[in-house]
Length: 193
Image (tube, rainbow, N blue to C red; front, side, top):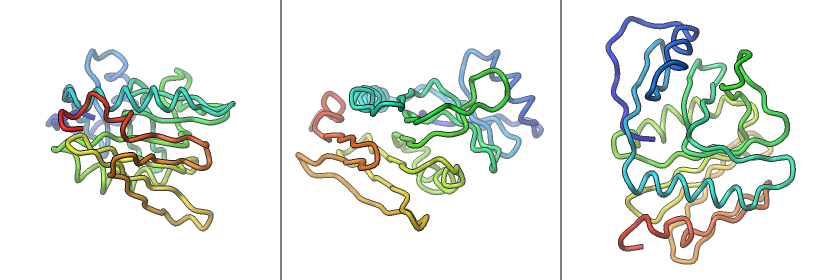
């Protein structure tokens, strides 16, 4: 996700946000009655997001689909609308409303960190994401170094963190049988990769 700029406006309802957003040429996230304009991401950010979608798509198990940062998701309990950098849905998609453009039930979400949103992506956003009943996997991808944090929901509802940073490392998502080699993910993204 690119940098976010808060637009100083009176609190909006979710319906007002969606009405504005569906006609806008640029993307904005929404939380607590506020729209946050998303600026363009950096070169590394865009390359990493595209690589992640490609790697996930190539290994998708039957009945699952990959989506890119174009798809808006709603974190229903929190009233957060956001555009993760990549994600996976398994089974039938559930949508908010009847437009088919707001997804409710992702299984995996990916955020590529931006310097300006790193604290939000690790803290408040992940806290809100954890309220999504269907969510089982959360990947935080660093764009300035070869490093991926993999949070995986366990059977007791706790979240386990595994970090990957070494040459030759691969993130393994057991429940999807997907392997994400860091060498492939970061190819072309870091000058020193």
